[in-house]
Image (cartoon, rainbow, N blue to C red; front, top):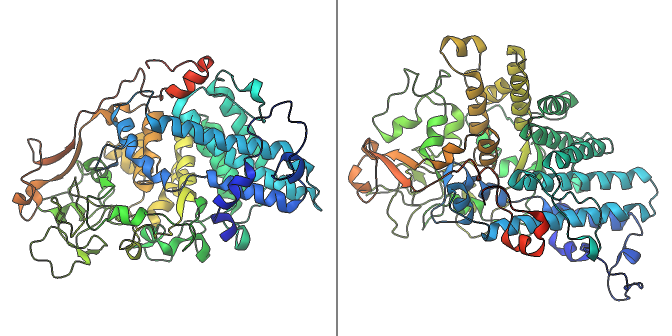
Length: 549
């Protein structure tokens, strides 16, 4: 695990062949080059390990701020993207572009040179190459979702070949889907463990293929890839038999892959105590500032009641106090959104007299440097490891990029979009997710009798299961629901608070719900794609700007 988690030491050794000039016809004696590096299996292992640095880490959670599940306290660049208030000169656009293509360049260098190495078993070399193909596919997934048509680069380019136009997105997607299928043939089925912990395997290739196919409405391909993962019999939902905490525990130290109990996470960015850590838990419950991820009213309202009905249809929904919001809900809600009476790391909450700051009871809206402040009245508990909150950058939670739960959701959605979803399909997919938390199953007959739309309920299931995992923005875009990003961001109702005066400084709507952010826009003529970053257009006018920008 240590060798996979700690990547940066090797990266400088691996950026070997970004572009070459013809007159460099001799290998330098004092640095690594393609002529001196690709000699044996150890070189392949080092180079492949370096590629894992391109697997997104906490950044995938940061991208949640582009959607409507959460609100960042300051105007970050991801928040500006989600609000529609940005242009082609936004730094994050160019950072994403250059970061993804740098990783693709590294992958192309590996794939162009790995067969030079002398290895005892040729299949070992092919396995490393397959891992690299999966990582490259992950990078292509992001850039095609951000920009649509993009240059498809599959081999190292020399200095004369860098000025290339964009290729149609469909061609890039075709290439990636085929590449992932090829990679799957050389990867082992078993979940990597020991020194191989965190490596890509066959399940990673197929699950990523299912995601990319679903994102691009290749529903038959998505169904096939997802079902093949399901039929492998390797993965299962994380569960210790405690429906009140299993979902939450998956995103704490309990669910780390190194513990050997997590057979759900398929692709993760591993963290390692004292060597590869981040600050996620502290930012979720930061005890002396405004929390970084503020759950929205929209997310809170999306959770079903315990009877399987939405809040606007269920007789169980009756709210007069803040505590009532959390009563009789899908158990994933209180394992995602902090419930009154729960342990937390945010210290002193909004109570005037707080004798036990380790327990959360009342939201805090005004900063006094002694407790976590919220903009919406809600806090996350998902991904918050309480022991990591008190100290800066000491969190070694794994970051889960693709879970078996998503595979099940992909299978159900793909079957539905092809018009063939059955109750049996739900029972082997979505209802397994609900069973883990002891939630009412999804029954087709019940949905029909209650006038519920099946597509909407499948999408709701994806939203609540994958909240804070960085996928909401991409789902909104592919479902063509951009209008959701133009809505005001709202929070709890101040009338529900034990002392409404504590929120006197907050703006509210006519019903008392906090208005945390306004002035959001979404233009369907341009905001479904990002603009090509200005620095890239200046270097290569052949790229051509996206429509509307």
